[in-house]
Image (cartoon, rainbow, N blue to C red; front, side, top):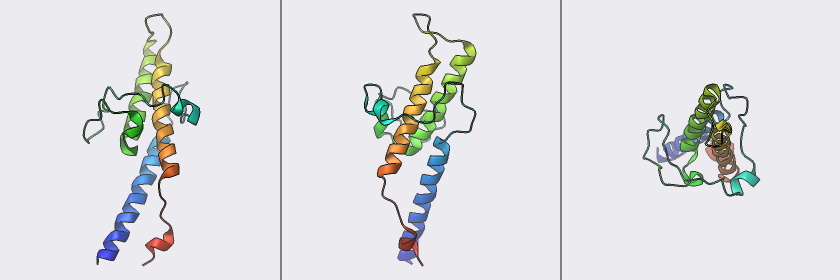
Length: 136
């Protein structure tokens, strides 16, 4: 019985990873400057691992405020990407500008892309389970 439970746990982990990946791909409602995911250059640059200052409203887990975005975990990253995408669309719609008068929606879109980039990077280094391990 324990063997079946272990296999079910592995299956559930794979399903959760698929759901996170699909969520990170977005719903197709992105703004005009929205990007799918940040590349390695941006992730490894000075802005690629920013400090979390706000938790997504959809996040039900413990607060990550004060943590670095790369350490947040894929479920949090997916929720944060959706949040920043929504912030960017709202800033674009409202014509929001920074102190110098330049549009600032791009920052939110960049943060959404960074979250998606970390999800992709984490998925590429995560251990995979083969179907042979799950054979009954």
